[in-house]
Length: 241
Image 1 (tube, helix red, strand yellow):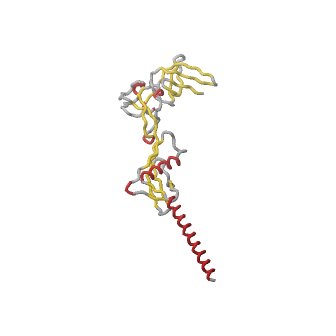
Image 2 (tube, rainbow, N blue to C red; image 1 turned 30 degrees about the horizontal axis):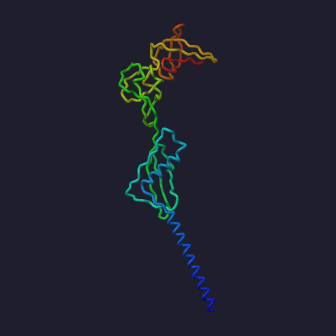
């Protein structure tokens, strides 16, 4: 009987030791998976997540930036994968990313983010007065925020060289098609006539100022007849059937 008791006590001791080793191993494994993140690391991870999440919506001319976390918040620990999310009412220009963790202690942070789209635009390199013929040396291309741009912008200088401005333009001003006449009253223009695949050109005198896409009256120099044509370029109009 005594031997049986000794055997049972020994077995219980072994089980207790095994259980203790298992618990110690689990605690050690949990401790090893516990990650420590500095505010700078959390900021970078949030920015990378946002860029990847919005990758399909962003163009090559779009920049994503997040407001750095205050270093005074100190490091954050997390035993699981960090969780990122955007608000339901997502603003395509400015938003807030929620960053959270639920273990070992639940915490969450909110990080402001800004999404800025840019355009390469034609702007003035000098001041010019109304009626000036636009030349290449007067223009340059600059990068501007899309949200600040209004109207029919110009992105290729070649599209407007030879046109004239209808109002004064200043250094750095964005060129807008409404500021220009691509054909101006009294100018001789090329008339292109397209009909059933047949293309014919003639010359005429435009009777009014017009910008791209405008319908203007042009007097054919050969026939003397006045026709309606669409402005398609600098000193170029097209008759469509």
